[in-house]
Amino acid sequence: MGKYQKKLATILLTFVATALLLAACTFGSDSSGSLGGGNSQGTGAAVSLTPRAGGANRVAPQLGAEAPPIELVDYNGKPVSLKALAQQNKVVLVNYWATWCPPCRAEMPDIEAVYDRFGPQGFSVIAVNMQESASQVSAYAREGGYTFALALDPTGATSSSYRVMSLPTSYFVGSDGTVMGVNLGAMTQASLEDKLQQLGFSK
Image (cartoon, rainbow, N blue to C red):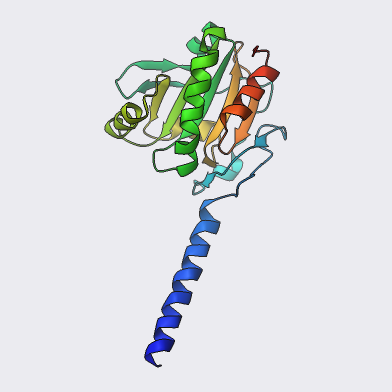
């Protein structure tokens, strides 16, 4: 094989490998799914996760059903309870994310902006980090200036109970603890505000 043929072969292999990696990691710019009873909406890119053993037998929380409990701590060791926040607010956004997830990083500033705007009306956020260290999450929170709860899920048990198969995945939980909505993929400030208005928040 000549010098130029080898170079061409290397370029083609690199291109194919990159294409396969992208195909394996993303659902696309408008991903959607039937998670949560078929009423989910996908408004942005998502990064797929490797299925866990027995994952096919798990059932995602259905719309109108009680949300699985979340009892975690944030990166400072402060308790984070979904039940407590739900009782104090109209809606709690449970957002599954990771620092290595580009769509998660893209939507986080928009979540912060919506939290700042609608927090006084009873909107709260639990951003559940997927198995990263407290120091990683702390540095990320400081860098972005995030003020809502960034909880640690070191074993992945909480994400497993919500059947999280891609990041970001978000659940909207009402004050009665039931699932009011599900979103697969990244949200924008506009799409999140629209969802909250559908749930009774005023502009």
